[in-house]
Length: 474
Image 1 (cartoon, rainbow, N blue to C red):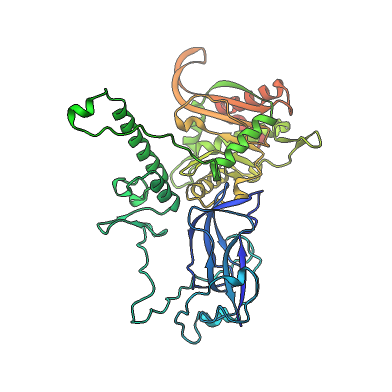
Image 2: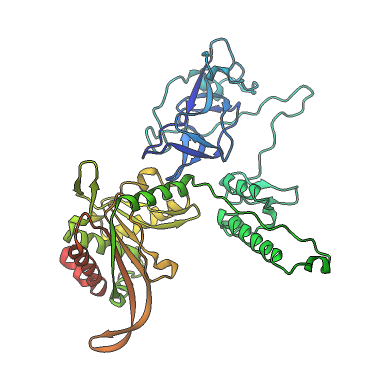
């Protein structure tokens, strides 16, 4: 006897209230196991696969790719304890969940996974992939029976992209367009863009969101130039005069919306100030080259700067803090959870290295690489993007020298690092060409005065110029 269960979008943690459906991982009529991922969603923090806590037959899905779903709204309904053919039986629960139209009966052999679905009637307690129980069962698919006449009822599977991550969008049959993300297809569709005309910059020609946005900008620039041509030019040449392009409106949702809210709150609540200094990084680059001997794990420059930050915070612990505005208290934190800025196709994110003060330079380097790779793949968990206590912002990768960034609320401080460039510098009393970097330090003026901030920045600059100073703190 089937019991229809409704599975709603769970609380994804970290105060998230909604998510955007990226792609469905199951079809109506498919048999699923307990904890099997059924949908991939994008939150303001990360891309997440959501597992269903019920095993049974999917009887309905709610929402298409690109739709925004609030926490608590229904995602799917599952007929628990049913064979694929009796999901609409008299034993189903009443109410909205039970009203979902049952799927047609798929073909299943005795002893198959449909038998397993009949015996599964327990909830797993899982919320997200990677949390709760770890034993997950591979996805099971069923082929629906054909309609009268013997024609197959199921559609052929959509062609996969070259990297195998998901379905691609196909054109009129001449070729397959390499697109994984439904968001990319939606953006192209909303702007009337033909994906067949775009050459993807991703791996194996995959079309990324940045490729589509660049194509839209290029088209708009062409149309603007044509619209600005002298009056009558179109009549003289016989060419059609195109209308002036309309304004573009970009919703402040998902990652972009979350960042906008956080920046606004930071500027509303935190009286920040910035100081900066130039430093000679020649010796730091030489130290890094000495560490990266053949056969040893590589040490990144960012890892060395992270180690300098933890050493400086050990000397100035009042900067590893936050302000409790409700209690009107400064809260000094015992551990350094070091955030660092990472650029991805979804925008700028800040992964967090936990307990950075306890890690060696080699360990910091390995963790930064792991988190950066996960960020670019959209696989960071909300926990890996939250609860930082201090941020290291290496904007030098963009080829700029300085910046006055907005603090990552509720943190109290951020170190900015500009590009390292060859410049004239007085070294040991003589003019020389040295590798110079500008360091900036933005801080919450409520947690310290200028003397503390200046002392912190000066210690960082001294360690950049003389990396041997770090040995004193080991």
